[in-house]
Image 1: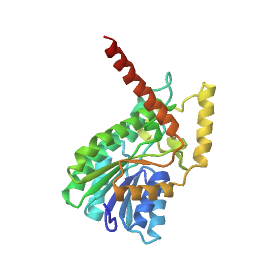
Image 2 (image 1 turned 90 degrees about the horizontal axis):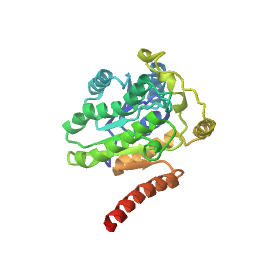
Image 3 (image 1 turned 30 degrees about the vertical axis):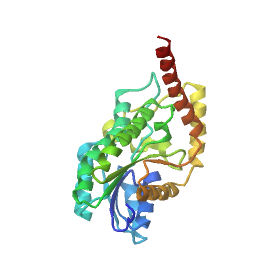
Length: 283
């Protein structure tokens, strides 16, 4: 999609952080943007801020972990803009707890927002991107935690899932004129560590704040919190995503900080292939 001016984008988790950065960068490129978020006040503020720059934007509140609300948001987008060219599945939470503390509710919340909303987003918006025959792009936000091991089981599982889904669909949807990209950011200046601010009312009291009883994990979380507080500007990430949409990048990475850990993971997998190769050779 070389010329983005006049196209229409739908962005989830768009009231703050990476989502707002992407929505802002798209609007600056002349894209009409529907911002979607669960936080009504933050969404209203974000939309007003972009409208003040003469951007053609609007907002729709939705809990994307509920398919019906995501469908209603799609309907509102069509009613407002008539069509959709770009889907950005960005909403995400850092909920969940470690082994021995996780609960069904915490898994349901994290999987619902981080993975099922991506699946439903593609199911709902995919046909809309195809219908006008003008081409389209799907960008789904995973994380470096979708490429390397981390400390939060449910977060890692969902982010690995987003990467896998994006890789699988890229070839299939290319035949339908739709590009597929997966965004795997590192430490970005967001409020991901405050995800419980967006906990749906239906889960109030069911998702408890995990107790960190492992000093090593506690230290890692403190380091991560500081790294996020001093992380990359979300608008820079948004500008990167615009460039990636224009170039149909399969993977969008924000930095090289975690490349050695990714290399170590790949080396471990390669070692597994080497072991079976040697075993077969000895037969």
